[in-house]
Each structure stands twice: as structure tokens, then as C-alpha cells.
Length: 68
Image (cartoon, rainbow, N blue to C red; front, side, top):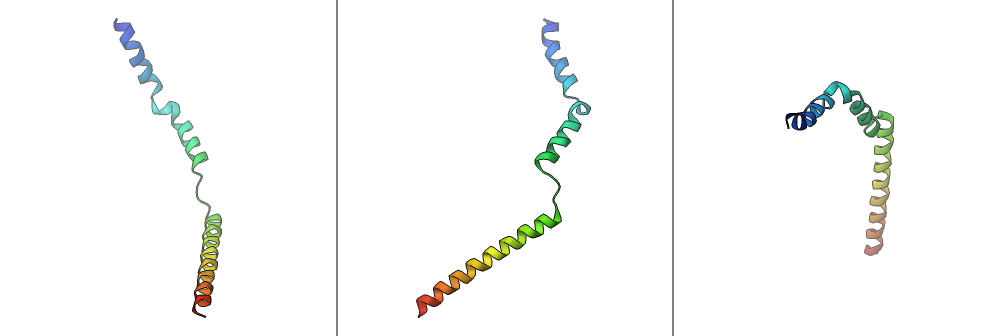
């Protein structure tokens, strides 16, 4: 009975040591969440600003057309 209970506990202890999976976790995390690229971020923000400006101009044009 002691072997039956201690075997899963020993395996859990052995395979959950950080040095066995730390490299894998870091590599997977970098693949899923790559470091932020400043150029891409600026392009993305500029594209959002341009879209918002177009939408605001379209709304203003519609409002002016309703006034007339």
C-alpha cells in the first residue's frame, strides 16, 4: 500500500521540478506573447487614428447635410 501511494507522489515531485520545464515555459510564452515591436505599435496606433479621423469627418458631413 505504501508503494501504491508513494509512487504517484514521487512522480509528481520529480516531474514538477522547475528546472525540467522552465525553458519550455519561457519558450512557449515568447511564442504566444512576443516582445512588443515599437515600429509595429506606432503603425497600428497611426492606423487607428486615421480610421477615427475618417469616421469623425463622415459624421460631421452627415450633420452638416442634415442642417441644410
